[in-house]
Length: 233
Image 1 (cartoon, one colour):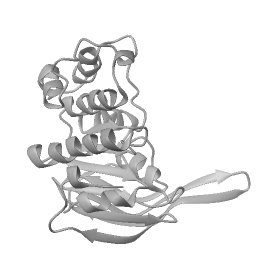
Image 2 (cartoon, one colour; image 1 turned 90 degrees about the horizontal axis):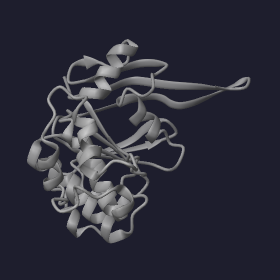
Image 3 (tube, one colour; image 1 turned 45 degrees about the horizontal axis):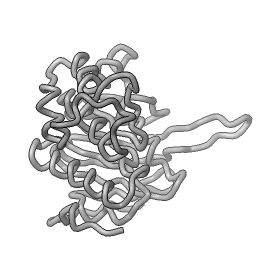
Image 4 (cartoon, one colour; image 1 turned 135 degrees about the vertical axis):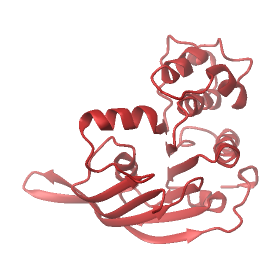
C-alpha cells in the first residue's frame, strides 16, 4: 500500500440549491519520503485536497489513508490526535503567536506531540540559532516562515503539509525556504507536500500532481529533481 492514498475522493459543498464539487472522484498515491508538489489553477481543489489529508475537513465519499491508517472515517477525537501527532502544517501566512518568542512558538507545538524533537535543536537546523529569543515582530518574513517550519518539524510528524509557503515572500527568501523544505525531506526522510500555483516548483519535486476541476489531470515523476537553490521563477 502507498504511504498516502486517495481513492475516488469527492467533496461536495451546498451553495443554496446547487452543489459545488470541490473534489470530483480524485485518486492519487505517493510514497514515504517523497517531496511532492501539487499544482493547479485557483479553484482546482488543491487546498481542499490538503485539508482532507491534514484531517481539517472530511470527504463526502471515497477513502483516504496515511501509512495504512484510514483518515476518512476517523472520529473527531481521532482526527484531533492525528493532526497533533502525524501532520505538520506550514501556511502562506505564518500564524505565529505574537507575544511569544521564536523558541516559545516552537515549544508550544512540541508540548502537544508524543515524540517531539528538541525545539532549540530544530531552530538551529533552520538557521535561527541567534534569533530564538526574538518576537515575531522582530523577525523578517523569511525568518518568521522558518519559525513556522521549525514549529511544524518539532512535532516530528510523518507528513509536512505546506500551503503556498513562499506566497508572502520575495524571490530570494522564498527560494531559501524551498531549500530548507527540500533539505528537510532529503535529510530526515519525512514526506513533504507543497500546494502551489507556481509551476516552476515542479522541477524540484520527486512527484508532481496536477489538479484541475477537482480531479488529477496528470502525475509526473522526476527521477533527478533539481536543487531548490537553482530554481528561478
